[in-house]
Length: 237
Length: 94
Image (cartoon, rainbow over all chains, first blue to last red):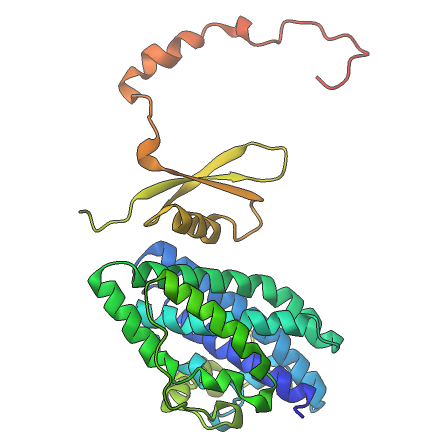
């Protein structure tokens, strides 16, 4: 049974790493409107990460706050799922990652908001409204790209293909999220149907993020995210 | 076909009971996406409780060249303002 610390750190790391990934789009998105939308989603996630990691630090009781957990841990200590650390790729790949993740996160936050642990459920209740919008935004784009031009469709298919290997990890029974799978499958199938896309074929799952076994991408992400605190430990401004 | 997305004018209702006010514009491929772009661009700081988006091409604007004819005649007609009435002391809510 996972402890509250394990639970909080996983949720916090998922949100932190995906928030950092989305922030990489700032100034690079195809349109100003998309730039703002992706930044908003990223900031929502970093806000959630702050709450979850603060809780994790309190549970741990070793005096680490959210910043210490975010900026002074190494790759092996991160507990995020592999999906969120995958590179942005093109816009369709970013949307595919968001679509798979936000639909899962919305179901999870809904469950957490109703859970008995009051500290966790308070964060979940706040997050669920934000995440519902993320899921809606990403789903809308899946439909438009999938049901758009030949090129947008090809990119959306490729984006989903590249991310699909990381889906099973979200429902790992060890994390207690296996029960969300049927609802998630139904939501994903609905949107893909509206986008006239096929649900990707099952493939061999890649897992390990929850145990600290990450892809090389996470190290590069942390290098950038943690640079300031590593170069100037304890700096504030 | 133009590669640019069409422009939409955004109107925000700040709170219930007030009228929607023009806030700016966004580019979006369709109405639903325009609403989302408007939400992300103009309501990040609790600016509103309701949004309208209207295709910019649907708006017919007055011609600046006709501004004299349209608006100047109102300038010397101060009597159109209800400022010449004496309001009795007992009247509230005016």
